[in-house]
Image 1 (tube, each protein chain N blue to C red):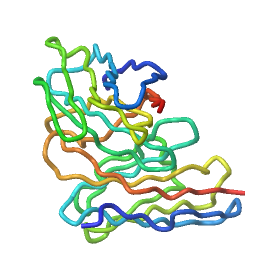
Image 2 (image 1 turned 90 degrees about the vertical axis):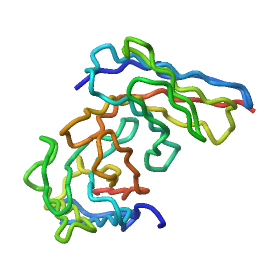
Image 3 (image 1 turned 45 degrees about the vertical axis):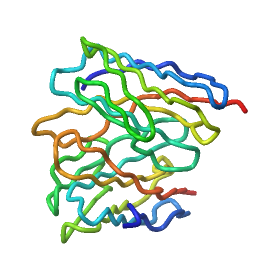
Length: 112
Length: 114
């Protein structure tokens, strides 16, 4: 399984953009890069995923480095509701179960 | 669709008792996963079903743990002879079977073993 490295914690001000980095230098060519977040006392919530190209959805954007050894989750305007633990998870592609191997994640604090 | 549901949300039991948890996935999803999360840690994978077949089990799943998905819809996770170390949040997730598909999680069942 590919290893990931994320900062333990980050802070942001409300309504400002947030860039959450993740290093996954051992990722294989067919691994997808998934991001999930977990709000206090809730189950994890899917945020976004990608393979090679940058991706956008209503929640966030995902920027994937050209060598795929790192990625950045971008929250365009942080709100208080975005305070959560964010997990970057490589997911094996073809022929696999799709199980998620969670690391420690990044705890994001959003200040009003 | 109301998403993945789990029952009960909280369970307090005495050491040595058996407990059973239920998970109802999103109806179109044929993949179902169980995870366990202890305080301050990320969730850990326990087991995976595709339809009714249990295709992978983690080494974390000791022989006191058993999971079923008899008709490929809901799933149950049973823990026999509970121990204090079993205290955790038990999370269920479901997904479509395609590559890289995202998982949708339920709210979890919080187990406390006294």
